[in-house]
Length: 199
Image 1 (cartoon, one colour):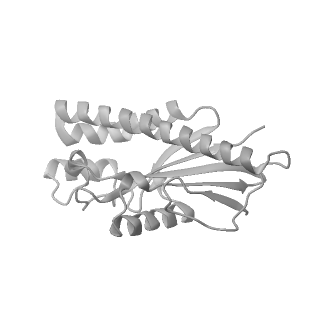
Image 2 (spheres, rainbow, N blue to C red; image 1 turned 180 degrees about the horizontal axis):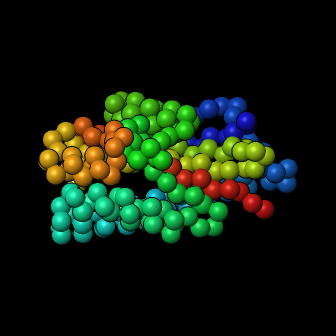
Image 3 (spheres, one colour; image 1 turned 30 degrees about the vertical axis):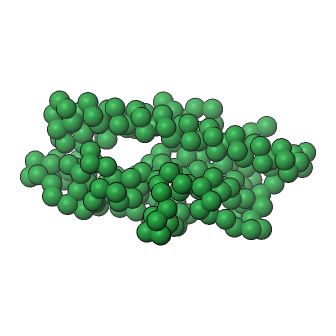
């Protein structure tokens, strides 16, 4: 599988990793296309994050962390589906997942490990992302990942000290839950998007 890695945050660089976008596309045109894809992905990530935060703030204000659990289980998949248009597929993943369906691929895991290393080295979260074009079963596909950081709002369901009610609700809804024990500022996970590139 050949790939070209794009470097929106100067985090990842792999010289010699080249994917063919088509013989008719010149290098300048390819770079322009790649930048446009990165900008589309970042815009979608902003919409996703904004919608997610609005739902969580509303849930927390009306019913606390228990309501937030319901939002993550029911509303977030709806947001992912609504934004997955124009050949885009939007999702979330993490090194410690709550829902096993969100488990990372080997590539996603390696990118999140690199994100953690970059954060430990002092990189700002806004400067950490990865984008790459790869051939998947003969189809050029654009991949993009952007970190999700643990905020104060997250700690009621993902922190180290969870109430008994929250623990009970998590055990009921997510019996294989791993996504707890976080502190504010930790890497909670990542938005992970892909777009099939069609002519």
